[in-house]
Length: 131
Ligand code: ZN
Image (tube, rainbow, N blue to C red):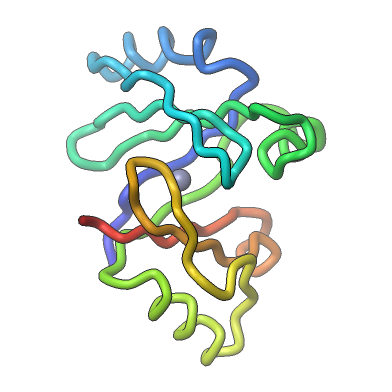
């Protein structure tokens, strides 16, 4: 399993992007709305692993609540898998805790699914299908 991207929760992508762009020397993608997660996201390519900046579009979404409780910073680590549904089923079979029991549409037109942060000391884990 490879790390696909690292999700960072921010209050505003427009405020967060310049710092990341000057540190990494790459441009962030145009913000994309992900209605199923009540966020908009921008990706920066850091040599194959991406950073995903997440800005809430609604305060009651999971990223909105995360920001209220914990402030900006590391939100999730995403691993690339051949099948999100198979990865979620495998976690369940091993007795792990899930947010999603089935994959759902995520950013960049990919299927995604999440394992519960309580199982990883507060770090949410995302599985993402590479096209
Ligand atoms: Zn993500």
